[in-house]
Length: 138
Image 1 (cartoon, rainbow, N blue to C red):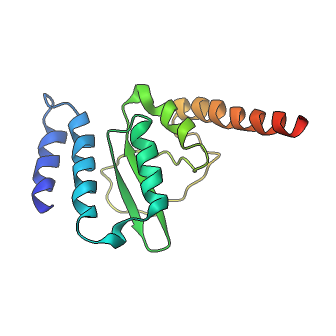
Image 2: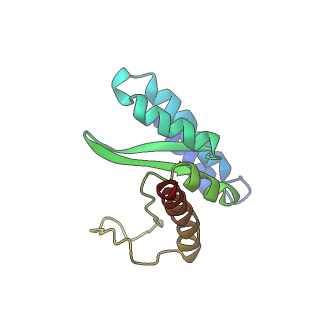
Image 3: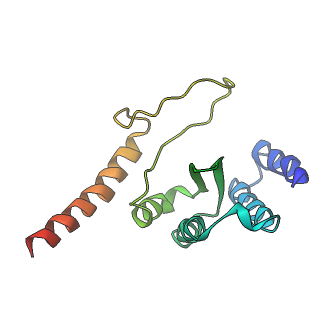
């Protein structure tokens, strides 16, 4: 796995290398990590990861430890809405890369990070709400 660090750096620093290769590398890392121990994942995490892949993610990575964490997916822009719809029961937290180094981060759902995310969230969560309302009207 250590060798993958150099390969990942090569991918993200080489403008002629498709960035989707980074997503493929995340997937290879996930598969490799799962061979180390059965405690890397469980059926719930596997279900989320498989749903992400089937909805267009190229790869993913489990972040965090112990009793909680995050699933990071590398998803081409044209497939992101499909992924959000597929995983709509999970909280989508937008992020951006930074070169500032370590700093305290607070997630504030009302803050607009990316206007396209707001529009996509509205579609996803409003359709879920409409489904719930129509179900209650029956």
